[in-house]
Image (cartoon, rainbow, N blue to C red; front, top):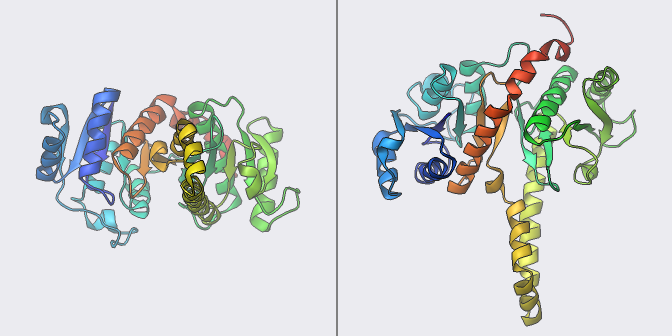
Length: 338
């Protein structure tokens, strides 16, 4: 299996990207293609003591930055590392793509270059958030600010396939994010989506458990949370901010006095495990579900550990066959025949 990596995308490119790729090559035994300015990649490989011959190096002279218009970046910068990498995965020169570059540019590029699965209205981003043993999937978390009920129906299907194959949940519980758990809660989008999800449940195609409030997401009530991208992104950023606040507060408590420092020393391994379970670098990235080839968006501030985790996630996504499941069930995921 070969994973294509955009070596120039992200706040810490190219050094941390290449460092993570080297770790993935050594520990996961996967073939790696690094796309970007070859001389920069070569310098990073040398710094890591890696053998250049162990990697496929693909030259791309341009870089898509956060200042570039995401809707036109991949069209204007055809020799950028992201655009070249997207063309490679489209043409079958690798099994999956990992990039920590601009989210908007990557989504637009994946849609225009790699293309969506036929019949899928919109691709969605589906991070798995820490919650117990399996976690909880949030779909969509920002790809689609404005949605229709059909989009949310397709998100539910795609999230179910993803959760079953990658999270190991036989019948993932799907919940519609709402302001209350009653069937009549929410606006027109939620009402229409609820009806479609319930119909799919009654047909035995998904395990829809109804509306779920934000407080219920981490209470073990659902495995997949379906929402529009605007609401999902606000929720995701709030969760990330809350985690940082809680970890900072805990650190303040444990370093407050000698007694607390002793308690922290006793609980060090447990605290480290907790910190690791909440670390975005351990999650690695977010799959762009609905794209016809595996595309993984790593966090913009990804370090080497995050890139390693994103490569591991890409391998799992390829092996799970999520795209094939979506293609096989597409007729049930559309409101009208095309």
